[in-house]
Amino acid sequence: TTVDPKDVIAFINASPNRGLFILVALYSLKAITFVIPIALLFIASGAFLPLFQAIVLTYALIAIEFTLTFVIGRRLGQEKVSEILSKNKKTRKLLSMNLEEGFLMTLMLRVVPNPSVDFISLLLSTTNVTYRTFISASLIGISPSLLTYIFIGEAIWDPLSTAYIIPFIIRVILSISTLFYYRKSPRFEKFRNN
Figure 1 (cartoon, rainbow, N blue to C red):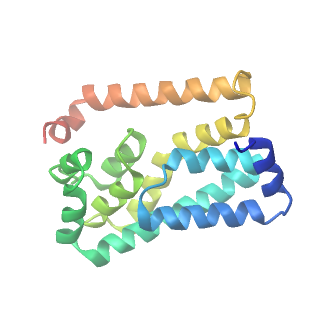
Figure 2: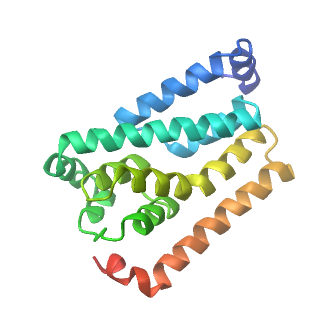
């Protein structure tokens, strides 16, 4: 048997706290397992919660997740974090990058499509970036993805609607323009060449 998305929504909406509980559980699981794609959680927030509630809750949950992973990374230490990151081909390159510009690099690592927001948090936990810089740059940097994916989630049951297509196009344009800026800006030359 297949699962009808309308049945899932009806199940979640049957209780006002059920959607909240499910999202909190998923974010908590993601913070320690690193396996749930962040885009999926953002889309789920938009699909299962009223828009304003989805935005506020998602910012709160992603801040908690960033904080948990950052604290875990600080507790594990640079050697253990390097060991974890070196197991993945895509994240191995992150280890050799120079992250001396705390706020700007944190911001760019959040905006540029990357392997995992959790791996970025772990990596940044081993640098001298302060928690305040880390969390503020992370929340600002993740905002374009967070907001566009929530809007996509809100309209996910009607993917041919403009409410779905416009945020999707904005997401694509943001990704391409950020990558273009990253690849062309002299400011990031050292970062690119590592």
